[in-house]
Image (cartoon, rainbow, N blue to C red; front, side, top):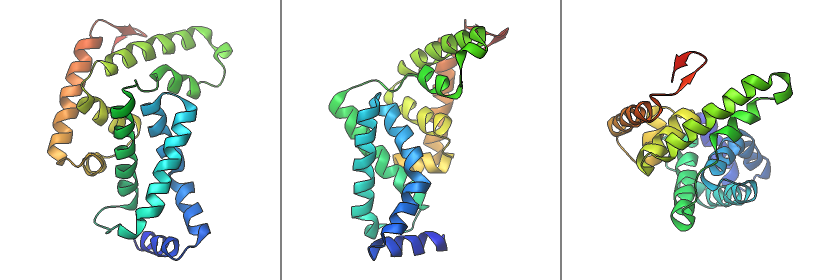
Length: 186
């Protein structure tokens, strides 16, 4: 926390290296969030740039009531939600994210095909969730935020986040109930 305050102070003084440190720490995660909301690389790059421009412009107003990362996610989520409202686009297909993790499908084509099928079914199920449920799934499960970070990002009580996650998982289980992957039900 003390390091965050120092970093923020350095950025406020115009220290370019300090802002580069902030970018190094958060850019990849913010970009992935933007990619999920935009569905394409050029728009994700644009929204990431807009997010960090907004962070730079408003970092002086950061109160320190939450972690710096939580505040940055809140700024990012606001931009992503605005993007979704303006464009009404779907998120990045989960199979693209899974395929990024698989270096070469030729190493195991059967496993790659199974993963792609699973990803398509999960993505379709996630897209059938309400935006409120989809947002908590994306932030908690796909972006790895804690309950508290999701709550701060979405400006919700922690209990609401937990409730939405629980309801979203119930809905996903219903939607995926008949699907079997590697001999196990999803």
